[in-house]
Length: 285
Image (cartoon, rainbow, N blue to C red; front, side, top):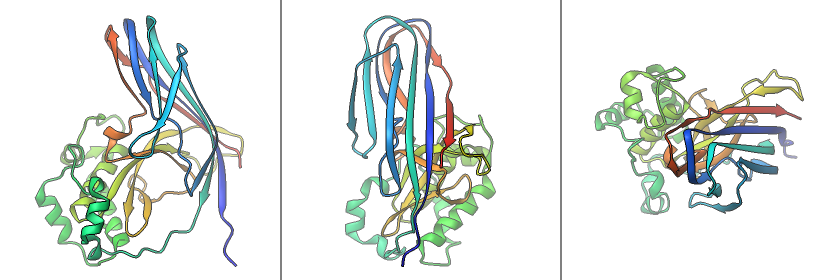
């Protein structure tokens, strides 16, 4: 008899947007703020509101992320986007991997996961770092490599909020020895791809307090982590040095941050600045 699947129900509110130094005459926007339904999480409710109000079109992008597109054609001084979701997260057993470092080099793997093996501007690392990592590998097991990379990255890069920007590259973070979850994820992806392991960037939400009472609303986090392939896709959080669990809610996946920004667009009007980001999460069960 198999063990029961443990679940957690989370209510999430994510608010973000822009303020203009004057007015925007029009804007064209995409939001990636709706959690995904998968084998480990079920989206029970999801709603996205904009202020000013705008008609919406939803679709799935190339990487399977839910995208809400909306245009504003009336003058506006501020854009605020609020995404609400109710999600059941499941703690499911890991699938037994059927790949190791040696057979990940097969042409079929390279063809199938080419976009998750190719270096990008944000994940590129010098060859000397890949050689340094390779010299430390003592096992053909991909999970062992992930743990090795996690240790290597966390020993080098201190988590310092505000020390980097969304345009910061993995190597820039490595060189300055500070970063945030985005940078640690880009570094892990860069190192894994350099050893032939398909890896992708995941954005989502993290409930930060395992001791919070049911029904207690806490300040959550927009968060980033990694999925790597060893015969099955597995999630790993390099910021916290562990597998993803009941506190992680997946929203978007891609090659790097450039594929998954929560809100992006173009507009005509005065200069803008970020409205800020707030994430509130309530554990209901």
